[in-house]
Length: 350
Ligand code: SAH
Image (cartoon, rainbow, N blue to C red; front, side):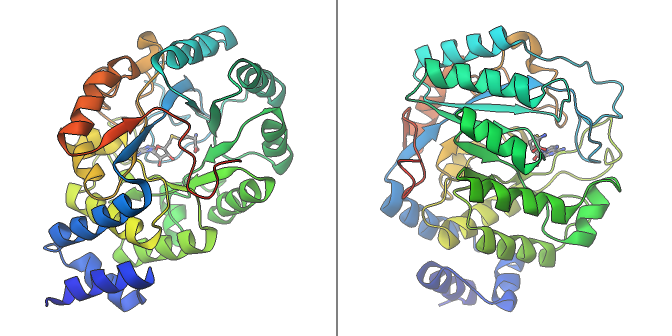
C-alpha cells in the first residue's frame, strides 16, 4: 500500500496524525481520490447522504475593518455600500421560510450602525416569528457581553473563521489593530456562552505555508467547533492582495477530506468560494465529505455588492430561489438536500 493511503487510513482510525505525517499528506498531490473514498464513507456513516441548506442573508457590506484580502474592507472606496432594513431582513426570512429553509445566517461586515440594540431587536423578532428555525450570526468580533445579548435574544450559532491560527501569518493578512489572539478568544467565548460555533480558514491565502495549515488543524482540534468553513482564497481587484494567486481546487478538496476524517460529525460547507473557483467545485466538495450548502437569500438588488472576492457567484444555482436546481445538482452526485435545522450531531437540542 502507498504511503499516503496508510496515512489516510491512520487518520480515519485515530482522527489524528503527527505533524510530520500531516506534512507528508499535504505534500502528496496524488492522493485526493483515495482520500475522497474515505471521507465520503465517514460522512455517510455520520450523516448518510444529507446535505443541509442554510439561507444566507448578507445584510450589510459596511465594515470598519480593513482585512487585506476582503473586498468589502473599509478602505475599498470602490465598494458600493448598502445595509438592509429590519423589514428587508424579515422579508428575506419570510421568503426563505416559504421556500423551506429552517436556518437563517445573518452575515455582514462589522457595521457600527447595527448596534447591539438594533441587532437584538432583529434577532428577537426572527426568534418569535420562526421558533422552529436556527439563527446563525456571522458578524465578526464583538465583546462577550454583546455575544451574550445576541444569544439571549435568540441566536443559536455563530460563524467566525479564525482565518489563520499562526500569529505571524495573521499579521500579514490583517492591519495592526487586529489580533489573532483576540479572534481566537472570541471563539472560545462564543462556545462558553453556548453557541454552536464555526471556525475556519482560507486555503491558499497569501503567505500561507503547509506549517500554517497544520497549525490551523491543531487549533481546530483545541476548539472542536461544530462547523468548519473553508474555501479558497480568491483575489479581489480592489485590495492589497489583488496580485496574489487564487487558492487551488485540489488543496481545498484535500483539506475538506482531512477535516472530515479528523472531525467525523462536523458540519462542513461546500462554500460559495469553492463554487466560484470551479463550476463543479461544490459538487466535488460534497464528494470530499462536505455536507452543508449556504444558498443566497439576500435581495437580488444587493447581491453584487457583497463582493468579498472577484466574480463571486450569486445569481445562479447558489440563489436560494433556485434551490430546486441546486437540489438536482446535489442529487447528481449521489446526495440529497435536507431543509431541516440540521444541527451538528450531538447538539440537536441547543
Ligand atoms: N465580518 C464577518 C464576516 C466576514 S465574510 C467576519 O469577520 O467574520 C466571511 C468570510 O469570507 C471571511 O471570514 C473570510 O474567510 C472570507 N473571505 C473574505 N475575503 C475573501 C477572499 N478574498 N477570498 C476568499 N474568502 C474570503
